[in-house]
Amino acid sequence: MPKKFINKFLPDHKTIREQKFLKLFGSMFQDPNLWHLNRHSAAGGFGVGLFFAFWPVPFQMWLAAFAAIPLRVNLPLSVATVWLTNPITMPPIFYGAYKVGTIALGTEEGQFEFQLSWDWLVESVNTIGPAFIVGCLICSVVFGGLGYLSMNLLWRRSVVKTWQQRRVKRRERHSK
Picture 1: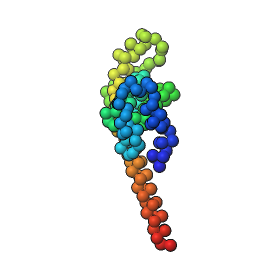
Picture 2: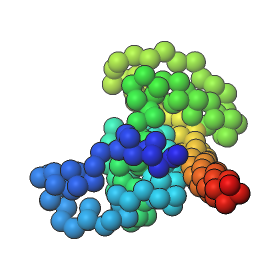
Picture 3: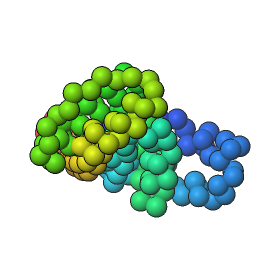
Picture 4: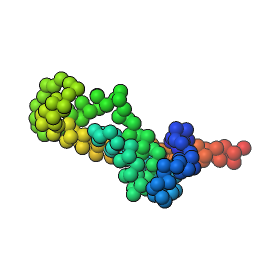
């Protein structure tokens, strides 16, 4: 079930490999493990994507892609999972990370009002920045690990269920 479900949403690896801009990277994207979908690659790709989803940087997809290569996990899944944090979900997710950081550092939650100015940004780095960064780091590690373990468990359960169904069907055929 997970493999069929995930394959519905992932692009064809041949189409991706033939992209002109990827030829700049040479054989880096030619490893079949980056495109193969099995329990290890799916769980790893999901974990990598969730890990980088909590990083408050604008190039999360690139980070997830370049981490997937040496880890030899599913590249499209790691890049797609990063989109857990998108413009709609970022405010509550990053506020939650900030709360985790305040708890971890033992500091009080500061009152702030967002302003689109350089002064506000510089002041925020000094006031809420440490708690926010620590919270993002903690959430990255926790949710990346939980994502890896959850996908691994889901995949295993799906395989066991499929084998059990096959066994029942075989018994029914042989009993007739």
